[in-house]
Length: 331
Image 1: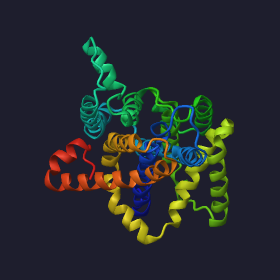
Image 2 (image 1 turned 30 degrees about the vertical axis):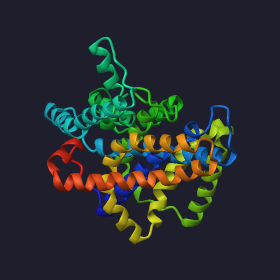
Image 3 (image 1 turned 90 degrees about the vertical axis):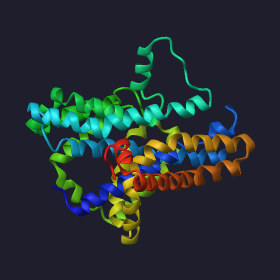
């Protein structure tokens, strides 16, 4: 069992990472400018924040691995129960929100008519109708095949962990959404290791050191486009800083964030087409306007998060069963 304090820290971190994902999809350089057009301020700001928010999905994989590897799944009953549970919490939302993603594609005449039904199945499995769910697709894949590699955590040998981490780190391609994602494989596995060595979660980095590391992280985020070699290390540094920074949040902020945290998954699965539609619509009337582009980049995610939370709260209030069904029981 984890403490209430640690549980709340996970919830707050998950919500903030969801906000980061929304900001990643608020990137509007392609919407506002021509392909060869370069705007110094907006490009610098959006590219830098894009690098900063790259820690979001790795954190989700870390957290998923941490909770998943609390158990072993070599008994038939344990594996079957896990599959049944994940069908409810992951598969059903994956199917529902992918199929729901067809609607905006149809409205915008972007839905591709295939020649054979198997092509639709492949499109669904690739999560092409709601791209953000590639993360859920990969999670289900890792969990489905746990009998092939779960023995690693049963043996619980540091030298085995070291070898596998080195291999996964070497093959890790940041921000890849391939199936399976090399990024997902690394951080899901690291989450399992943290579960075995969970005392490290109690470490609190001194504020002075954390502040210096934060400055270093900001510098690396904003100069990264010219230093590809630091990409992986930048993400690892960002995760360390992000996790430790949560210890210094004011209690009033924590209480406020905990009230919003239950809607993290709903925001995650509903925000993409909404923020895409808004930024494209604005760019249509203010194409090339850097001030509007920057303003939209910062403001639209706040608007979208507000809208989705209101929608989620009311859906949960007036139709709780259907809400819980399409969110995998998250409330």
